[in-house]
Amino acid sequence: MNYLIEHIGALLKQARLKKKLSQRALSEKVGVPQSHISKIENRQVDLQTSSLIEFSRALDLELMLVPRELVPTFHALMRGRNQEQEEARPLYRLEEDASSD
Image (cartoon, rainbow, N blue to C red; front, side):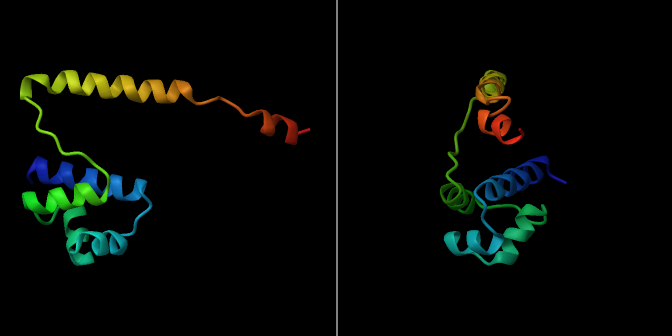
């Protein structure tokens, strides 16, 4: 199986779930049958570039072409961003402490 098909299918499914969209709701936004979305997410079909662009728009994703030599830098930046978001979350809330009395 083509790694790219597998990776894109997983990313689109993850983005759809993050947006709390069903396959049917996404299919209505993009204008493709729900069964086609299922096949994409289950890595049974390859996407055309035009379809990938439409899915990206519907899921608020940005498609970018990154020069191969810059991919490690991009990944490092994303790891740093994810760590900052985790550190910004409080470990507890005062409301939870007050309600447990």
